[in-house]
Length: 444
Ligand code: NAP
Ligand code: HSE
Image (cartoon, rainbow, N blue to C red; front, side, top):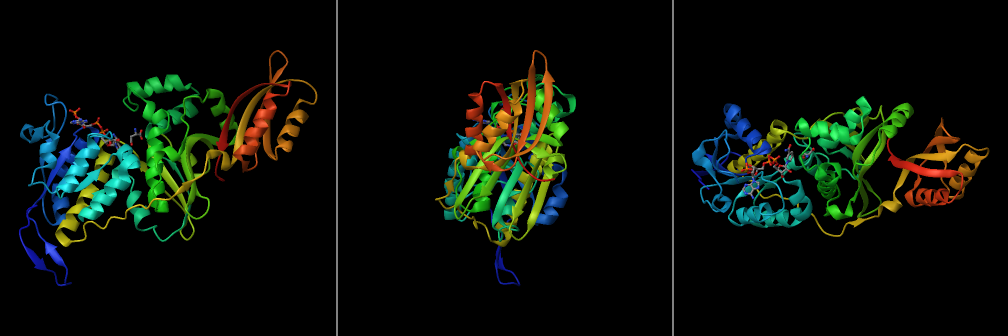
């Protein structure tokens, strides 16, 4: 690190006044180029706010032939040489994946460099270790871009909201699935058709698994939960379901009943050091703040014991929005380098208990096909009643060949009770088929 002078401020703390903060980038794709462009386009404003220029001096990529918006001389495929470069103060890890990103970050921290990363998978799986290492080294490890792209979520949870006991958080944490679900809602199309269109437009990856099967949202919810509840929550302890199985019929019924279908990440406090965290398609009232978040937008709704309900929303992905979060973190680090205060990391503790999904208390949507016979409804109502599941609403439709379709909405019950009712229903002759069921959240 270049330190030009060290002098005491009028307030008595030490100023470390480098002439320039030198940055090494690992990865120069969607997020990397967005961050780089922001540094170049807003250079004057950033220097004014930070007090010193920020220079990107090395950029690590895989493919040396690809055209780049940066000077060719900065680019290398030797990423270790960047984290080992004694001239570099801050590393931006924007390459993704658990390895070699994790090993490179570790090495950068051991070499005395601050780190900014957007890597939700790495943070969700190994964040506790990396944050502890940064704290031990007296360095910053910032990761605002990892959840919610350009939306400030991590810093508000760590700081402005930290005095609250978080009671519940619900988030639309994945832009690709929100785009697909919005299109399915608006155009009545099936999942496969919308996914194909999203891939052609570049909104969805060629391999959409991480997004549509809920892994991406699972990582993000694990990170948010660890911060909000102050203890490590690993992704494996977050129940996960994706959106592949939802049919166009469900969107039509949801609309008729006043709901939207969203892939929500939900976590709630269930007692001291005990939470239940889950990612799954959910019916949410159209009038709920989350029901109005469409397209590639993300949002986090939070209920704290003192702050009440609040919601953050904005662009959860993309070059510029995510680049903005990366540069916000970098500016924070530069200020800490100049004014002191780096390394005030809040390491997560171990020991969070996470409850299984069967213990969740929720409302439910259920669609079944029945034989259209006298007493059919009475039979089904008896099954619900025997399992202590109370009904809140119902829609019926006559189908050809003496069949009928019934959609139920329940009052809140424990999932185990609801599943018992489904099991019992499968055994009564009047029920042809359980078509689908989903959890229902929120009041308008
Ligand atoms: P991307 O477009 O695929 O870019 C990845 C970059 O890293 C590319 O420049 C690639 O090199 C380089 N890279 C990857 N593996 C490498 C390796 N082993 N050695 C050298 N270079 C390597 O990815 P991205 O969308 O920018 O995402 C980057 C990170 O940000 C990920 O952790 C992602 O989860 C996170 N994130 C992304 C978004 C978003 O909107 N895209 C939003 C929030 C967070 P080449 O250019 O040579 O291929
Ligand atoms: N694939 C992610 C999404 C990118 O669709 O939200 C942002 O993390």
